[in-house]
Amino acid sequence: MAYEVNTQLRGTTVIRAVDPGTYTITLGNMSSNTQLETVSSASIRRVVWSSNGYIHIGRGATPTPMLALHGAGEMRLDEMAYSIANTNTGNVVITIATGGSVVVELSKVATYSSDLNRL
Image 1 (cartoon, rainbow, N blue to C red):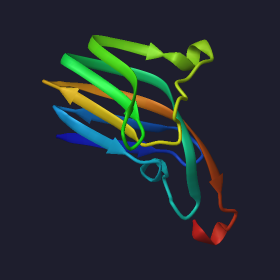
Image 2 (tube, helix red, strand yellow):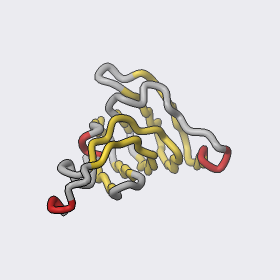
Image 3 (cartoon, one colour):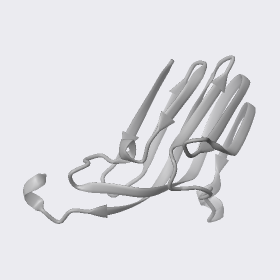
């Protein structure tokens, strides 16, 4: 069971999950520096996956289903001027059954501290 979250201040968050399991990423996990950036919502922009079972992506404490992924593929929603923003204030919950990997890119809405001494 492994996942990583890569964040950029004033930028996107990329989540990579590999192997069977359920991975919960909170909005707080999407901040690159919690003293400077407070993330209030995040929308799914891109998804790339490969699985020999299925991968589900949901949002919230009791996950609302957003995506059910099978086989392999790629969604570049941002290229169509679209994102998956339903329940965008909730946790991102990724479930990988049997095996596989997924990379999810999210756009963030955040507020920022202007205190430059915190850098």
